[in-house]
Length: 114
Length: 111
Image 1 (cartoon, helix red, strand yellow):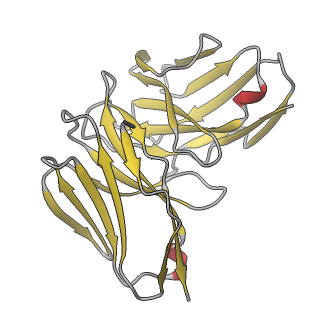
Image 2 (spheres, rainbow over the protein chains, first blue to last red):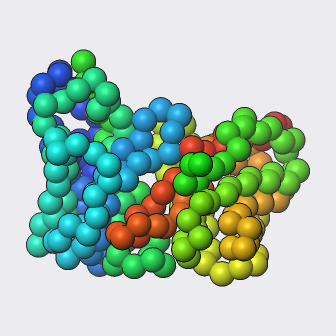
């Protein structure tokens, strides 16, 4: 079975632009979480969606938004890009959104903001 | 106090030795704990999950959990150069039960 897929793999944008990142979860998984990882740090939680509803949001500004579609795929949108948004954006898929559910990461999208 | 703390390393061990990675967490209500391995330039890969006090073994990997001490560890037996990576400890917490990560421990296994 295919794992978590993300697109695009790499992206270069300039300050002030907008970006959309996409994620498809493992087949049968209904929850998607987004994380941001900057160099030298562990991933930081941005959003979690389960059954198309937002279940949680991390400490990120309103420039960050996301949604989950009926097929459980998800998009992360970032408006008015800043240099500090340069990072690896990770999507993680889990069966549900319960405590014991393991999360599996996709390959990530590396965003560079110039 | 950070929510999840790991020894930043780097940690170097010779091939065939046991590598010991440690992690402490601050939220006593946490019930689920995970170890991920991340190779340079790649995404995190789940190695182990542990939910109950004690040891959990999977091949060369053993996770240990002590909720009273708020401590999680990962032992890698018979370390191989291919184990060289950053190891991330993660704890589920918060209303969404999201993963909260430590900053990782960089492990190098010397041939």
